[in-house]
Image (cartoon, rainbow, N blue to C red; front, side):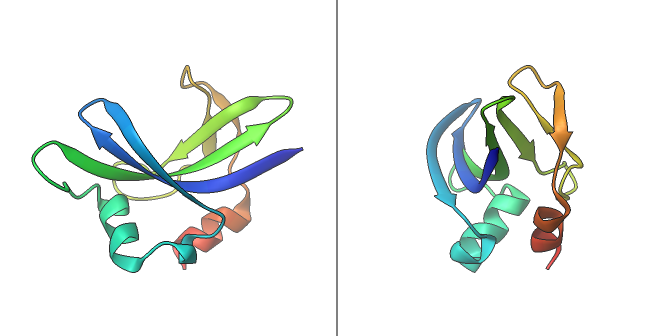
Length: 97
């Protein structure tokens, strides 16, 4: 069985320095969400990214980061950027609302 959660990650260069997890996108503030979708710089060195995280007993942890043009990807990738499985349609629909 797999579990899913949305995460707005705060990045400083190539390093994640903070996480903000939610079950639903509408639980984030609108400005916070828009900044993460657009990867708007917070200051000279930090920015945020939106990602859907999947945890599975069988496949481990995998991530679906937005594409460079701000769209949901079709697949989750593992830590080695290998495809794990498809992103369920309900999450794509939630994002597109």
